[in-house]
Image 1 (tube, one colour):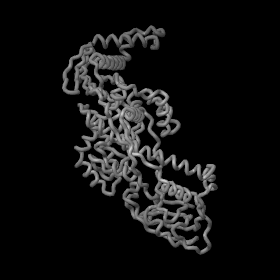
Image 2: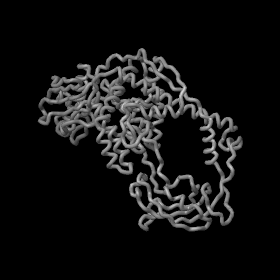
Image 3: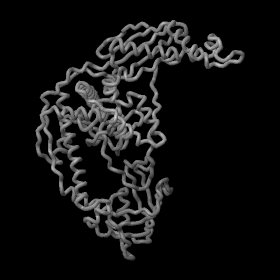
Image 4: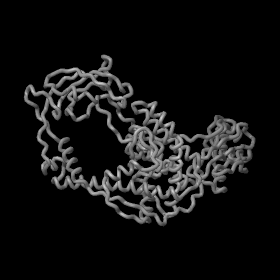
Length: 544
C-alpha cells in the first residue's frame, strides 16, 4: 500500500491511498480458502469445490469484503505511521472509477487533534462562597409535606366548595363540541387553588356543591405538551361527586412516622442534609465557573473546526427545539438567528475547554475506573425497557465513542476536583440569593429565548435524550456543573483518550463513494402522553 499526503493545512490532513490489485486479490484467495470447507455444491464432495467456482458464485461479496478489509487496515496503518489523532471519524471515499482487478484509489481526509500546550495549573486562586442552611426554608418544606399528606373528609351537605377544599369529579373535555382523546376522566381528585390544572379550570369550580353538574370554558396554554391542544378553546362537562374539607395538618412525631421515619427530628435532619447538598452543589457550580474562566483566559490554541461545528449544531438544535415550545416560536427562532455568531464562539470555547480538561486529566493520571464505568452503564441502562437493557450494555461495550461520551461527565468532575485540590481556595460567607444573582448576571452571557442555568448532560449517542423546557440563556463562559460533553463535544474526550483511533474507520465499499457509520443501539421507550387538563409543568430550561 502506498500513501501520498495531499493536504496539510492547520489541523486538516488528506491522503491518497493506493491499494494494489494484487493485495486485494490475495485477500480474496485467503477468504476462498477459508470458505472452501463450508461450501456445498451438487457433484462435489464437501470441501472439494474448486476455487474458481467459489469465486464465480461469491465473487462480488468476496470482492467487497476483501476491499473493505484492505481499506480498514490501510487507514489504520496510515494513522499509526503518521501518528495522527483524529478529532472526528476520518472521511473515506473510494475512487468512483474503481473496477475489479485494478488498484483501488482511496481518499482519506480528517482533522487532527491539536497539540495542547502544557496546561498552566499552578497558581490557581479561587473563592468558595459558603452558604448556611436556611431553617425557615426547612419549615416551609415541612408545611408543604404536611399539606401533601393532609387527609380530607366529606363536607357537610350543601357546603359550597372554596379554595383549599378537595373535589372528586368526573369530566368530559370537548373541542368544538367533540370529545378529544385523553380528555375524559372519572373520580379525579383536585384541590381548589392548588394550580395543578390549566388556568381557569379550578377557578370556575369554586362554589360548586356535591352532586352538581357544571360546564366550564377554558383555553389550553400555548405551551401545552399536546400539539393539537395548544391554544385550543375547550369546554369541560363536570360532575361533582364529592366535596371534601381538609383535615388539620399536624407537624409532629406522628406525622414523621407516617412517612416511615422515627421522629420529627429525623425528618428535619434529612431535609437539612438535602438542602446542604443542594447548597454545596450551587457553591461548586459557582467555583467551577470561575475555575474554567481562568483556564480559558490563560490557554489559547487552535481547535478542530469539525468539532466546533458539531458542538455548534448541538447548541442550535437544542435552542430550536426549545424555541418550538415558546408562545411565539418564530420570534424565538429569529432571536436565535441573530446571535448565531455568539453561539459559535460558545461552541469553540466548549471544545477548547474539553480538550484542555482532557489533557490535564491524562497528564495527571485522572481516570474513570472500570467499576465506576460499570455503574455509569447500569444507571444509563435504566432509561430503557428491560428487554433493551442488555442490548444497550453491549452497544456501549462495543462502541468506544459511545462509551467515551457516557463517561465524559464523571471524567470532567474528577478533573475539576483535581484542579480544586491544586488551587488556593479562600472561603467567603454568602447567601443563596447572592450566588444565584451572581450566576445569573455573569458577564459574557449570551441570551437566547428565556433564561436559566441548569445544564443538560449528554449521554451515549444511542439514547438521544429529549431536552425539555423552553429556550434559555446560553453562557458564553458556560462553566456550570456541566460535563465534558457540555464543555466540549464528547468526541473531544474520546479522541484525546480513546482514539488510537478510537474506532477503526469503516472501509469504503465498491458500491458507495463514502462510508457512513450506523448505530444499532436500542432506543429508550417514549413517554406515554395524555391530554388530561393538567397545568403544563414549568420545567427548568436546558442550557445549550
